Image (tube, rainbow, N blue to C red; front, side):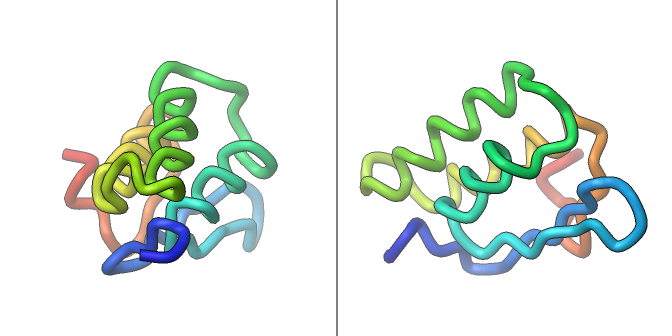
Length: 88
């Protein structure tokens, strides 16, 4: 899979009116967490960035990266739509 493409996208609310991102792969997720994340750091986001980069390099699966991204969003208290099954 190129860039660790995900089977289904994740839409994450980055706070503020209309600030959201549609994330479709591990590379976009790593960039989002590095450049646009409204919360500074945290264990889940740190792990997710590394896992997403590993997925881009083929060292982790795209779905592992997706789950880690969802965990990071949960840790940051961000709303995820429409797919929130991994947050429970």
